Image 1 (cartoon, rainbow, N blue to C red):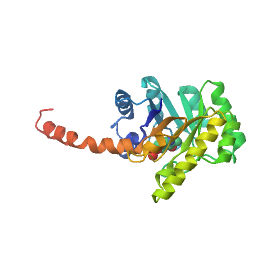
Image 2 (image 1 turned 90 degrees about the vertical axis):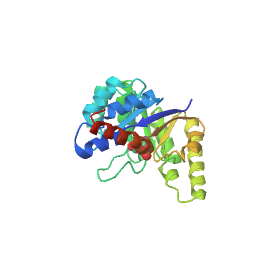
Image 3 (image 1 turned 60 degrees about the vertical axis):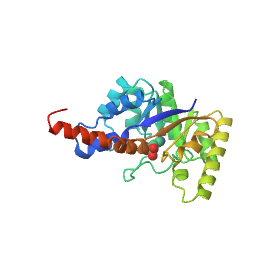
Length: 240
Ligand code: PXP
């Protein structure tokens, strides 16, 4: 069964814009689960720009499906993961200046470090997923780290400028899935997926979980707008 991991980072982004208490990503996670999310994903960034340590602690207590912690392969984050024990960890590259995670991990370029972190986490029974481009060498290197999962970066597919490139990127992802499966890796995917482009990715062979955030939070803001305004009018009349 293909599953959906809902990334709730951007609920925290809105909260952090005012450094206030709402909207609470914990509440968003509960609602996502009630609506059928199979998992909750959050990215605790080094600069804490959206998800905070408090969020991770509370998500660990409240998530009833599974909690996927996206994080950089740093000592600080490994210590946090070992303390909170998410159901799995996705290692992602992280640069301070980027708006969002821009490319896949370079497993080849930092093989020893990634392998060490995979071992540390897996020794604590935390399965590890590596967020990579569907590059043949990166997939092989990922298998060599003994991580259980890869998450294929779908950003280039999502951002393709025309249908020909979209098709090429989809083929690239498909070859990646076949190679990864042949190497015994389990396969997730994510980044930039939308209501319009998700289905072909959902049909890729051996795909297990799609991690989707921005488009769901964006839609939630819009589909919730009318009700939110109506409820404010009620509140102004003391009727809420
Ligand atoms: N997967 C990974 C590894 C990510 O870093 C992100 C973005 O935080 C996502 C999935 C979700 O991407 P989007 O918000 O574009 O759906």
